[in-house]
Image (cartoon, rainbow over all chains, first blue to last red; front, side):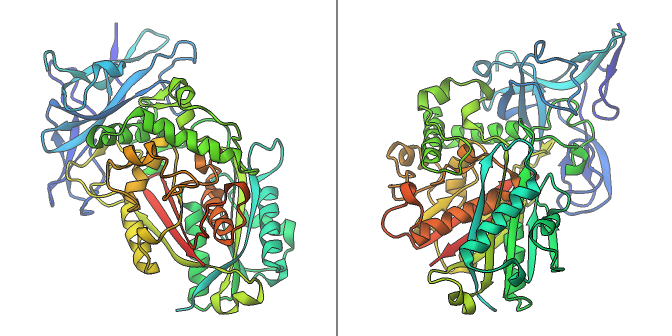
Length: 142
Length: 381
């Protein structure tokens, strides 16, 4: 079955160990996700691609338990929609990234737990193509 | 610089009003404010109008009289009304005008706000993958705050229950039924830890304020309420804000903290001097956080303060005496002027069943919204 990334230049993929493609200001070193057109801290337009660490800790989280309005493109209906987790994962001391979580039950999530980047199916199109998105999964035993 | 007084306030009730347009609600609010001030539309030298849904709030002039005045339309997210108020006051402070109107009006579809994330400087795919929701940001912010400062779910329920109770006492409110803490906790989870009844709803309504030079206020009223400060601030690098695919590890305070400090400084008033408080309660957690961000308590103190009923109408820190956003809903352009309307009634002693006892003299209002903008107003007798 064909799999495609939901957007280009957001993560390295296909890859055994995918990485998020962030940006780094060559002037002040600020790291962003994704690549930002210019630096949110100093305004410099000199930014370069910077691959982000694959692991980090869960800084905060919530669950999305109702079907978002457009422009959401998950393809579900109110009947087929299943809640998903969403959180902010701190990657070393570089940046906090907002991402889907593979867990949607708050009881399985804990602020401070170790998380790892994964690429998971987000939607299946009519022709069977799986559209893939980045997400974070709890690291076993963390 | 010239001081500024509020001499009239007017409100179109908040809720849902069928086919009635936002412009017509705005006209009603302005008429009510003019009547309250005892002035005619022809006396109004200029106006600022705020709205999210209405491109040109100045169309309200076709309902009031096409007098040709300068009428400036503004939009600034949930801080729109604070922006309209601030600009109106500044135009008087500068000496350019003697008397003007700030008005806000809106008419939203039910359900969470949506838009194009690109217009918020977010990546184009941010909405497609289900991240473009203000509600989930507020949930993530309060979840971390509860973890850091020991706030319980029960405290969130106490905030919402209080605001519904206050809404019962407010004839202009959208929600006028009390809801118990247990029912709030048991309502549908929307974004953990926030349940359905902990959130406000976008709705419809309008509010208007008539302002003039303080030195002529006594021509119109025996009880002018002085606008001592009106500030707007955007987020700084390091603030954890709504509609962002990333956040910096290096942390700075929220824009509310900066708007608040600047307002206290401008007014020469501190949080201990404030008698009535209006805070942006997009959700129950936001009210808890904003109590601390505006200097009314230390982080974590809210747990005990809410348990003690400190923020009730009769408590030492009355917050959202008219029911706040939770009971009134949020017509974005009007929301902050509703807060000022309530503060003016409270300071004049005209708040009826929800009157704060002890002759309150100082009122404080705060707004916060996407993409990280805050507004604070301080009024006093």
